[in-house]
Image (cartoon, rainbow over all chains, first blue to last red; front, side, top):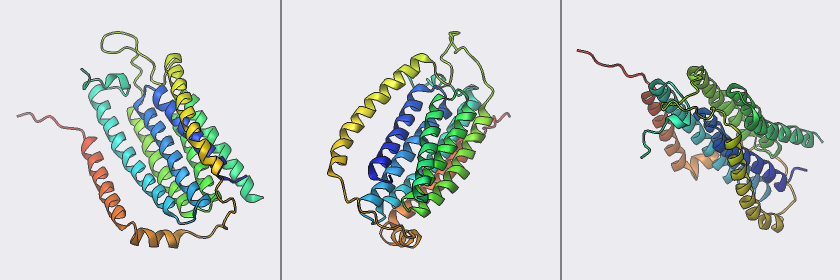
Length: 101
Length: 178
């Protein structure tokens, strides 16, 4: 039951849910939730390939760096969201249109 | 037996949490469902013997990122302005039928691309003999301190930069009146 294909399937479902959330939502924090799902899918893939292909832990290192970068990205992204809320009183993605045109 | 049960429970928790994030209409509930999904991913890490990775996942994601997101939701919540600055009614923040249709189209397209990539990978059928799980912390520490020391140091600088950057960006700016 614990096989590479089942892990790839779970990772695929996580990635698709992340894509869905990123496209469907109009809320900046909800889009960040989708990005977290996608990063988790890729980290799970790295760890699964380490287990089932060769046991040399390089994938674990990559997963660790993905987790670190996801934490940094969440901190900076939420800081930007809070600053945007102070300026515009909104977290709707359509209100962030200053750089258009 | 126990490993299979843990794997099934973690897989159900992961997939169910991810799908609940898609379909929940409340941002706070979506964040809690994301927390459930992250717990499931930690269980999946445990099933393939990645003990340090599972612990890091729990500490960093469940203890750090989700709490940060909950605080951001609570700090920015409560705005229900339904019109944009032109006076037109705008799309609700959690999406409506049209955005969900477009998102399902995008998901189907990316699913077909990934399945197309994955089918030859799965046909190769790599070695199915599972090696027994053994502690990885010591080997991971050795690898991080020898082979990947440059990436390790760069990530520490990145974390410092992210910390300072987040504090500077979200600081309220005082207007100077003289």
